[in-house]
Amino acid sequence: MSDQRSNSGFAFFSGIVVGAVIGAITGLLYAPEPGEETRKKLSEKTKELSDDLLDQFDDLKENVNKVLEDVKKTGAAVLEDVKNTGVDVIADVKQASKKA
Image (cartoon, rainbow, N blue to C red):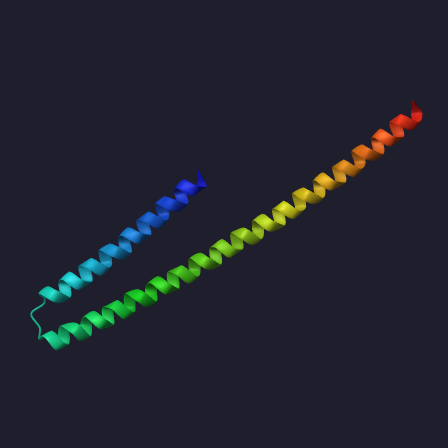
């Protein structure tokens, strides 16, 4: 279920980025300005969008790393609980077999 949420969030974000790029390019190309000025604005907009995308990618990477760290900690705790339970069961079985 969380995979679907993750994929739909990524698809939504991708759609926003693609829409923004297409809108910016279309607006600049139809603007009544000289070609050199239009190319300069297009270059600046592309740089801005690229920087924003890289920032958001870095944020995503940080969040994924945090989630992975939480999973590792939880997994280690569960493993330790299973080990302790196994040791207790073995001890109980040994004690019960001595009584029998």
